[in-house]
Amino acid sequence: MKTLKTFEFTAAVGTGASYEWDKILSGDIVQLDAGKDFECKPATFCTLARSAAKKRKMIVRTSMLPKDRAKDAPVTGVVLQAQKASKEQLAKWAEAEAAAETEETTEE
Image 1 (cartoon, rainbow, N blue to C red):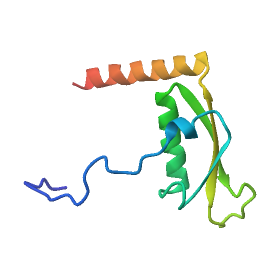
Image 2 (image 1 turned 135 degrees about the vertical axis):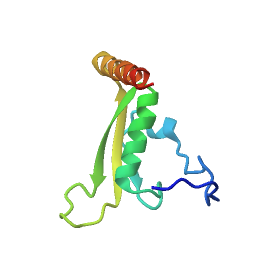
Image 3 (image 1 turned 45 degrees about the vertical axis):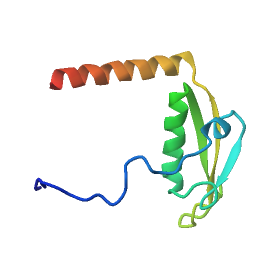
């Protein structure tokens, strides 16, 4: 590893794609097509959806398309559905966040 004095970054931070999360996480069963509705890898989009849902105190179920695809067949999209997180799930998130904060405090 080496430390650089300067470096010219080619892309600005935070210029990634934005999605209509309120519509996507409406509770409806939504199908999104790779290359049309999102440009990242389908697994990455599912992670982004989970993160956006968590910020809204929701959970999201996801499935890759086609559902019955062969082992090496390409993923063509995702289907997802968001719903309100249960009290138990909210408690787990709060507990994990508190533990992470405690860990950060002890590292300083």
